[in-house]
Structures are given as structure tokens and as C-alpha cells.
Length: 314
Ligand code: SF4
Image (cartoon, helix red, strand yellow):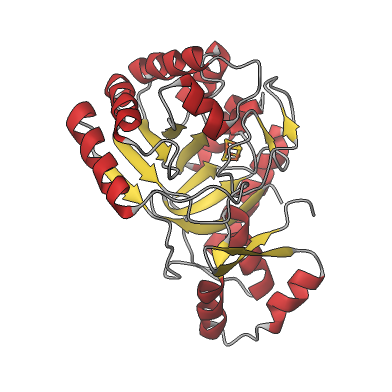
């Protein structure tokens, strides 16, 4: 399933996900990644799926929603890896445009120094780029990039892209406790953001089970201090996303199992959220047990809470 959802997104509304990259194919292996460690580390762009297949699935999804009297606000390329590794990203965006709904891409920006990646992203209506650090050593520590990547080139690529891009450009900064949440580091990130001039600078914390169990979420006080510093230095409109998702807004199809897989394919979901969703649907929790037994879902503990996520190896 390349096209899934829609699933509610705080930033994008009801979002139809486009999973244009096979599981864990990425140029980074971020310590906070909720998909686990990257096992297919690469920086060379290539073909993964046929753009026509993605377009056909997208059209079928919209038809299905129309028949069910439901709507979607956007297509978002938010795959189980880095979306710009797909050499056909621009062609796929071109094919999705005639559907007349917003197209978003969430990228780690590691390939934004390449002209062809800039050109592909120019076609999207909304682009989110990651700025976890402005200092190379901290970038290496958090994002664990492919050895061929240059931090300086990536930061310059983002600035160059922001000068020409006509759509909505936002940034994401993941604050990891004890690594990039101290004031000096945030100050440098803020200086970088003042050059990128995003419409919004989002600050996130790792609230779901990350790749490395040693990763800790930044404290509330460092989160609010980071927001203040970034606002003051860069002048950006800052919003913090703590990731404590609510169950409101999830749409449902006839199949509870399909719904659970759609939701858990975007990010791990807390057990209490799943329980509420099942109660709403008057469904038995044995559905979850069966999905765990079939290997469709995985169960995790994080910060004393149980989470479920889609098994991307399936
Ligand atoms: S968080 Fe994103 S960029 Fe980082 S390893 Fe995971 S998929 Fe790649």
C-alpha cells in the first residue's frame, strides 16, 4: 500500500499519506527515529515505484473517499524513509496536481544541495525541512548522516531553496534532552532559521519510542526556553508539538483493522488512544491481539506507556 489514510495531522488536516520509499531507506539514521535504525542507508537517488502506480492508487483513494462522503485536505509524502531519495518525486507531484488538493513533502533536507531535488520540491505546495542542529558535531550525534553528506552544503541548500520557493516552507527541530536543547545550541539553530525564514518553525520532542532507548525528550522548561530563543533571534512564528495525540479526527472505514494499520503506519500510537478508538467502534481488543500475532502490528514500551506501530518489515 503506497497510498494510505487519510489520517489526521495537526499541521495538514486530513492527510492522505504517500509512502514513496521502501521501509527505512534513508540518508540519516536519526537517534530519535520512530521507525528504528536505518538499514538501507543511501544518498543516491533512484526509482522505487512507478509514478503511474502512485497516481492510480491516489485516484482510487479519492474515489473511495468521495463514495464514503469523506474528504482529504492534502497528499503528503511522509514515507518510511527520506522522500527525496525517490528520483521520480517531481514526476509524482506533477501527476498528483490535477487532483487539485494540496501536496506536502516532509524531508530531512539532506539532499537539498542538489539542484534536481530543489526543482522537485519547488513543485510541492508545502515543504517541511529538518533543522536539528546548526553545528556539525551535534548534527552527526542526533541525525547520524550518511558519510558522504556535508552539513554545510545542506544548510546552504536550505537557504538557497528558501529564497526561490513560492509555497509554504516550515522547519522542524527535534529537541533531544541533553543533546541539542541547551541555550547555545538553540541560539545557533535560531540564527540558521533567521536565514531560512520559515512560515513556521516547529519544535518537536521525541514522544514516541525512538530508535535509541537512550534518547530522552527535552524537558518542558527547555522546550519553552527554546521557543523563546528561536522567536527572539529568528523572528519566526514558533509552535511546539509535543506529540500527545488525541483520538479526535480519525476517520474510519468498514474495517477496524485497516484503520488501525493506517493510523499506526504514520507513527506509533499509545495504547489508551487505541482503546478509545476501539470503544468508539464497539470493537473488541482481540483485533489488536490478532494483528500482533500476524506480525502486522508491533508493541513497544516508551516512558512507561505501551505503544503500537505498523510492522514496516511486513
Ligand atoms: S527520522 Fe526521518 S530522516 Fe531520520 S532516520 Fe527516520 S526517516 Fe530518516
